[in-house]
Image (cartoon, rainbow, N blue to C red; front, top):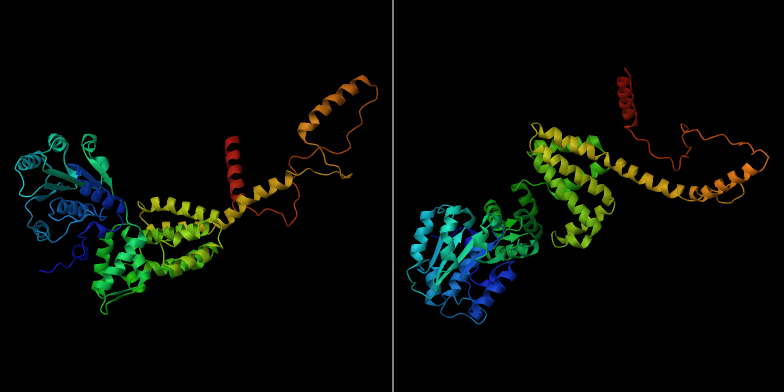
Length: 458
């Protein structure tokens, strides 16, 4: 029966075919070439990045009869053919999620005692963090001092749940998330082999949705390929099937927000709700969009790896018209409302409030810069009618002390002060050019303060 899953059909058969894990494959091949095989290894990292694949390649290479000088299995000898056909009697895979009791570990320990038919007996224990604490304790002695022919390869996605006593007995290899460009390149290669025309922009969307997991990307590719009738996967098809907000909708919505066009914002949200988009999905897409705008403003070259060239240039040109402080304030506001949206009953209202509050951010950003400009103007020394700069308070203190001593010794009275004292309630006059923008909430705050004072007085 044919295998329909692309992830299984194109599973790597050599270490060089593993995508995005060069730091792991190089180390494993060096161990094979030098014949320095550790008997306990721990592969940890996110799901779908190649942990089980590397464990199977290691098991096949350990029993390969014609290992290449680069540490690759030949895939031609009898041992490799048995492994490829699933008939290898020296390789055992155990799912710790369903075999996590002490009895299961006891059966494994009893099975380890029998010598293998090949050179090594390899045990691959997947999801090892699901073992119970009693099972871990029963496994410690065998893991520390296994027979010379036994090799244990443990795989997990949650390393922090494994006992420290187990970690100290294993060589730990941390797998990383696969970068987007490498996923895109792999998707385009598989699409070419499958005679499917995959647009580069669509491949970038699939890679960004997989979150660094190649298996998730290949699963999405299978889903999209099943919808196509002409063997073509376009960006529009990906956005429709995955129900994603496309770039045009996000650019239009962000433009209305920064222009404070509240009527168009509510109209756009209503249309998105009618199309079936959830409020959490809209907010999440808008947050990712603003994050890309912030990166495009601060470092335009950083988007070349995560976006196609035409989309990256569009973000760079759009971001130049927006200040980074405004984008940072908008992202902070969306993060605050995203946590509230999870537990809210009326999620649409929460999203509308969030976007309408973002329309006030341009005013808030300008208001923050006003104190900085006023401080710069007042810090300069003021000039009198004689065009001589007046001295500061620190320089006036010793002069006043000297004048008081002189006036106490002389009989002439001190000249009276002709200039009236400054009125603390009088506000400084400002011209229309440098007049600060009026706070629209100032009257509301004054009313609140007046009510509080009146209530305390009564």
